[in-house]
Length: 131
Image (cartoon, rainbow, N blue to C red; front, side, top):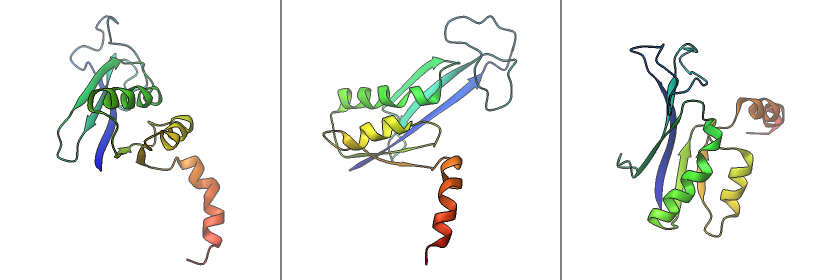
C-alpha cells in the first residue's frame, strides 16, 4: 500500500499586487487575507518519501474542493490503480468525492480531518460514551 499526500495551496504574486489579471493569475480566496493580490493555486501529490509524482497549477480562483476527483483520475491513469491512502486537509474533499472513493472498484483509502461543523454535531454523542 502506498500513501499519497494531496495538498492545495495558493500563492500570491507578492512583488506587485497590481499585476494584470491574466492567464492563471486570478483573485480568489486568500489564506493570507490578501484580497488585493492575484494568486495561483498549486495542487501537489507527494509520496511518503517526499517525491512529487504530480502537480498542477490552476487559476487562483479555483476552489480546493474541485481538485481531488480529477487528481485521483490523473494518478490512476498515469500510475495505475493501487492500494493508496490519500492524506489531505479537510478543505479538499467533498462528501460526494469521499463516497466515490469508498465505492470505487479498487477502494481508495483516505485520512482527512473532520470538518469543525461536523465535530460540533458529534461532540455531544461522543461525550456520553464510556471511554
